[in-house]
Length: 133
Length: 150
Image: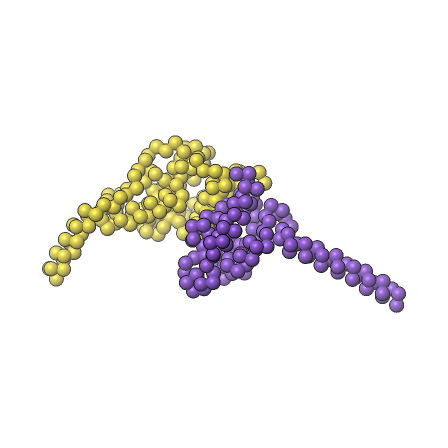
């Protein structure tokens, strides 16, 4: 009986540690493998709502998926990551993304001026941090 | 029927007077990619024949690109091409911009989106084989990687 209590206490403690480290991962949004790619929560929210459906591994839009997968960004080499980040900043600033066709069909996808600024500031900030340019 | 032909011909003659504003050709560009960067000769040659007409200031306009309405299309495509990527100003770009363009080149070439179909149709020598595409994509990726220390 004592053993069982001890064992469950150990399991309970282990579970707490696991859940704490999991929460930390979500809070920092850094993915093991590339500490340079940091996504704050407000940026992640915009990506999730307005970009992720096409630009992720599970997307059915092959062209969009080939160009950019947000769930793979942290695994890119520096030159690729910088290239993608600069494309993100440019395409949202120039209003090329999300595509006009997609916005026509799903008006909610349109980025507000504030969201455009948040995304481009984030991309450009990361670029300066990573490339020093 | 005759009237229609005459009308069409008249329209054809009239549109010749609308300026097409073909982007200006500059043959020597001191910041050109190939002039300033160590691009392997076979890649440089492919870029020249398949990309440079729209993506540099060195455009070779064929005779028909001076005839409206073709001139309007050539003018638009060349202008748009240079705006998106211009190899003539390459050396002026920051490393990050170069990385972006090289990443885009990689995507477009691998996907087969460039050169545009209408261009390869009219310029038979500009068509890229699968092997050419692989070589250009690999060059773009290696070059971009060499710009940064990972």
